[in-house]
Image (cartoon, rainbow, N blue to C red; front, side, top):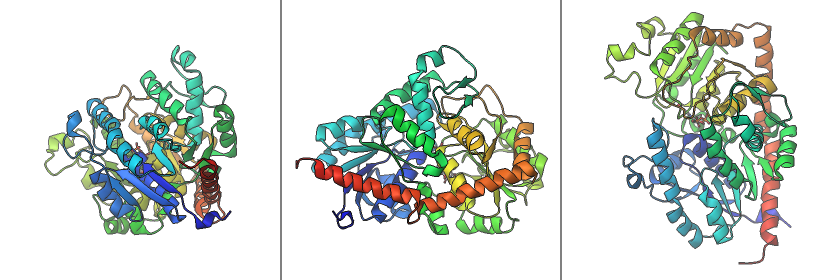
Length: 478
Ligand code: UDP
């Protein structure tokens, strides 16, 4: 049968947080590039972003019920929500999206639904309508496997505190602390529903997870997973890399001319994703750690820091007095959304200090940039282990506190010396740094190849589309 001649009708439902929305929409673009008919269901302000960042996507727009749950009108993404109450309200609003989305899907039936696992109602909706669905969770398969192991041993794990080994796992991995019970309890039902889907699409390339995790996942769950990423590699031109997610607060030209003025591999890029926010005293330690080394930095700090109306007194809580003046040639501070992919792809960037959100981790890997890992919450601690212990393309800063959320006060600070030491380990050009850099470069090359014709993810996407076609043909006509 010639699958090239036919196309599937797919409805994508991305979750409204940058770390989920950006990769799933980029993966949707990949399906379009293979001739599939894709509709992305999203809200008005996210649609505005997509029209610029992913112009090939067909969109269906539904209103986001922010007012109904007591959020400010216009809030349609998790970025910039800075407390647990508003995050809970946001999640409630996301649950209310079922009504308008189900109506649309019923009237415009696709062959498949591809939805983020953070919408648990999609399982029931898809069953009601008799439409198979693919699940997406935005994690690596290494991390999903770790979460499945933790889920299976949840009672024993939560009966004690302190470090633990991930049970029944291909590698011997010791975690420095236990995931908060609130997090595992939230994840368990979602992971359970994910396993009821037709299959999982993974934003990663097989070489980074490793074949052992593809087999391990299938063995422990009996579920099928397709590696079809890295999603970020669909963006080739500088302009495509710069326009993604929120609107960047610095222009492409400004960023590039600053980076062009620096020697190769001399800049440390620091960014903690779209949700994580540190208290002032942690930012202060970070700034002091940077000043100890004398390297070049691009430092992305939350929007409200360093605004024009911020008083000197306020500023000195998070930035040492005179920091900007002393470091004006060496440190570029970006206050708000940065064009991360553009920055990471520049040859002047020599290391990435990251919170290990999966997208950032994969973007750093795909750019061949070694990482300094500083996980904060959720999946990030597992991602750190994959990068540092298993693949050897990064070093740990020494963060051990597993928060429930990405913002708010913390018990422990990562001090300036730990920050300085971790940066130096990657930037001093010693033997360890050379080896890590070499491995990181190799993974960057593998990531690029994965999406090219004949690469692992390219082949997996072909296999997935063929599988979906066959399954569709095997079903009785509705
Ligand atoms: N991002 C960006 N600029 C920023 C902050 C984040 O482009 O200033 C992008 C980043 O490239 C990644 C996503 O937002 O694609 C964040 O996802 P990740 O999984 O790394 O972290 P999360 O925000 O979910 O914690």
